[in-house]
Amino acid sequence: MNVKSIAIYLCIIGITASPCCFGQENNVPSGLKDAYNDYFKVGVALNTHNFSEEEQKLILDNFNSVTCENAMKPGEINPREGVWQWEGADRIANWCRQHKISMRGHCLVWHNQFAEWMMYDQKGELVPKEVFYQRLRSYIHTVMNRYKDIVYCWDVVNEAITDQQRPAWGNQPAGTPYRESKLYELCGDEFIAKAFEYAREADPEALLFYNDYNATDKGKSQRIYDMVKKMKDSGVPIDGIGMQGHYNIYGPSMDDVSAAIEKYASLVPHIHITELDIRANEEMGGQLQFSRQNEEIKPYIQILHAYQYTQLFKTLRRYKDVIDVVTFWNLSDRDSWLGASNYPLLFDRELKPKNAYHLVKNFEPYRDDSLPTEDFQPSALNQPEQEYPMVNSEGYARFRIDAPQAKSVIVSLSPEGSGGTVLRKGKDGYWWGTTDGPLEPGFHYYHLILDGGIFNDPGALNYFDSHRWESGIEIPAH
Ligand code: G3I
Image (cartoon, rainbow, N blue to C red):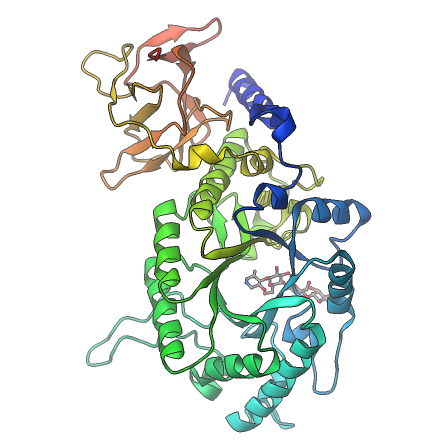
């Protein structure tokens, strides 16, 4: 990408950074929690080191729910029999009590960071499951009673469902839908039922959640649904499903997010997005922390990042009746488990709000329900015989691009200054997208950004705009 095109991006992004682009200056909501007051709580995961004065101000301005990133996990609180480490969880819980911010409890049972000692005897052998259940019940009662005044819900069981169910093989039925863990080895899926039973005993007021990642994946969402339904049908008290929300700039699609929410909402009354972050690539887990330590985030990645966040929140606002809270997994890129170089949150590593923050906060509610009138016609400035780009009577523009090898396609035009309109690859292999609102009437220069490279739209005529040939589109006056 040449210097000029970066200048194009920076001025696009620069134009969009100031909140004055979104609604009138005087009605810009002060923080995320205020902007979403009519939709759902906005939460944040805290640890004992993202807690400076500056960070506390950001938290108080923007969030009205808190989760301990690690401090309330069994392995942190009760690492060995009789050893209790309350200080981390108490510090965050007491701060929340002081500021009257309620908390999500995370978590009571997880194969990772678990209080493994509960499953073993002195000789290191697995104990009978009845012994494990006694220990687990005592643990759950102890922890839930300590925080029941401030914790309104718990991730009772975390990540018990497998990512890829083993296919049926020969006369063997399809493999178990459960993650192969020591918990499953010792108890089968009974530990799930027992954990919820003990949690309901300990705090009848708390909402009890099953929490997992990749919860929008078609196969895994069915396995989660089937497990929760089986448990509920046998009387297990599950109030809600937590969709963790560890997403990336290329996916999941909003269709998959919507389909999963609707599937779960048919089963439970409460859905929480529990661990939201949107990473700058598709790598999984901890490898991100090491593989991209200081790589600068390219401007086109920032546009993809902002677009995925704005489209996700537009989708989540539609389900405000079943979504109680959306929690970001950490406050800023500085302390994200993904490493700052993966640019996952709305505050950067210097704690500054990104363009995505302003777009997520200063949304226009009327836009959420507005759909373009389907009277699209080819733009007057298309190459001969070219159907796309198209424009409609209200000034929306629709694009279709043939770029089978591309990982991302952005059109540099967008109504609210998000830096561009991100296209999504359709089942037909073309990249499709429509601007999120009407463009100003008249002529517009534009170009395509394919994986960071600048290209003209083959469907449109080209015009020289003082320093490079750009594509042109004519938006009809109303
Ligand atoms: O506390 C020890 C510290 O004493 C030691 O010096 C240090 C040395 O590495 O490790 C510290 O423990 C770390 C712990 O976080 C607390 O900081 C572990 O190494 C580290 O692996 C652990 O990572 C956490 C991870 O869960 C564990 O799997 C991440 O911070 C946390 O963001 C992440 O959160 C999970 C959710 O709970 C469940 N959903 C997935 C999500 C991401 O994995």
